[in-house]
Amino acid sequence: MERNLMKGNEALAEAAIRAGCKCFFGYPITPQTEISAYMAKRMPKVGGVFLQAESEIAAINMVYGCASSGVRCMTSSSSPGISLKSEGVSYMAGSDLPCVIVNVMRGGPGLGGIQPSQSDYWQATRALGHGDFQILVFAPSTVQEMADLMGRAFDEADKYRMPAMILADGLLGQMMEPVTFKVDEIQHHDASEKPWATNGHGNKRRHNIVNSLYLQAEELERLNFERFERYETVKKELHEAELYKTEDADIVVAAYGSVARLAKAAVDRAREAGIKAGLVRPVTLWPFPVQEVREACRNAKRVLCVEMSMGQMIDDVKLALDCRIPVEFYGRTGGVVPKPTAIFEQIKLLSEKEAE
Amino acid sequence: MPEFKKPNALTDVPFHYCPGCTHGIVHRLVAEVIDEMGIEGETIGVCPVGCSVMAYDYFSCDMIEAAHGRAPAVATGVKRGNPDKFVFTYQGDGDLAAIGTAETVHAATRGENITVIFINNTTYGMTGGQMAPTTLPGQVTQTTPYGRNPDVEGFPVRVCEMVSTLSGVALAERVTVTDPANIRKAKAAIRKGFEFQKNKQGFSLIEVLSTCPTNWGLSPVEAIKWLKDNMVPYYPLGVFKEGAIR
Image 1 (cartoon, each protein chain N blue to C red):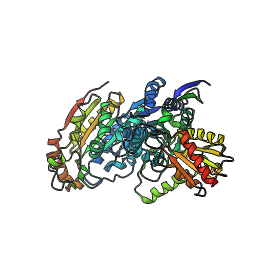
Image 2: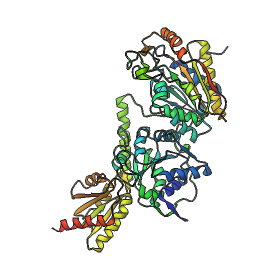
Image 3: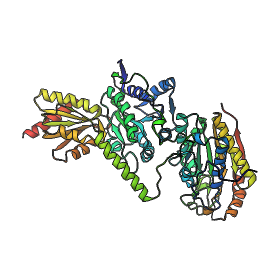
Image 4: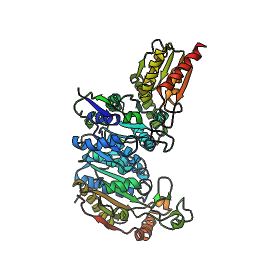
């Protein structure tokens, strides 16, 4: 397998093409523009479609139409653009359509900034649009994972008929690292795998309808019940986290994405200083890896949640632990990246508190 | 002697439209064109939010229900992924010329090979008759109870005239369905739109001046007369642009 030195955004785009993504619909926004640029260059060469839409709203609705016809497709954006896409995501969830949406997060709220952030965790895992629904959320931490999770997101989205999101940040998108692609050739997926697709019935079946409108309250309720039953299956089957030095850890740091890398360095430093520290890094954010977090914190006396936000994933960490262990928070926001030394200081502080 | 029957491209589901509403006629014309071209199995329709929101139950081809105003973007997604299939949208004035203006204009200027059926009845029918982007000056609606005042509410949008300035447009034609002669012309325009699409020759939009007796507060016959007397002078019938762009 060939190793390539690539930016995270480019690795993700290449992985999407190899996973059989046939159409990409985008709109320019920093810091994810490399994805569009890569797609614009590569898609025409491999018989795919790159289309720059007139807005984020149009882009997600193009994805809606394309996904309805059974074609693997995606869009990417950054925080303010994702807010605009939320209408379309809700419709896709309500119509049980698979697709992949990439959010290379930047600081918010509002226009915010263009530096890395993790402040869209709540949006991704709680309410990416109106109505009762969830989407799959994957959080890569390396350029290699940007590629690996991309392919997986397409497969899982198809399997569960749900939109899937890659929740990355500006740091991961821009950094260069070696990456090895799991598949050498472009995979082919077509609508024949999706009997529900609206791609023309060819006079061979009854017409398919893609729709999220149900005027009978009981019918809509029944469909929501069914969808949430499916979510329960997803919760059982799809949860993943990396555990690092947690077996004997007194202090467990919980962090995802690029922050988890910084936290790992802080954990190593704490170990050198004689503190039994460990790290749990959720890879799936929805479903949240509850069992893995519990396992990681089995012997923990205190948990430190570190995020590039004012504290959002911390809610899920507390819920996973049923608040049985004190969960503290350290975060930087607005585009400021926490330093490993600062995370180490926080670990040290907790360790001292525990010793008292 | 041909037998008069329901086109195959329509299902057996009864229409929910009000008496005197012209949606039924336009649905039928679209279905007749699909039948005559023999393309039902290759056609995907996109319906809007508005009175024709449930058109997905009425057409026998594959159907998608779009968010309000987004039908041309949804149709673009279908078409780009399936360039050899036929894709049409069926949209009202609020959907196409207010909330979906950007999607309409950009699908048109890109020259997307799709056909847009645009129902202009100067009102938001489904929500009970509010001012539409095409509501005429002086026209009373639920949200212009004293009549549309251009000083306050601005002027109605002439969609065919607007999109005919765009290079991606192969067909922009305004028709109506008030009488058999006009119904024949409307069907011919719809057929032209699908033919341009078949030959991948650009974006086609057929605007159909339509009635809304319920929200206009008129009988079906009075509504037809009101359309002829008030709408046609403001929205002249005819071809505004015609010709393959590629």
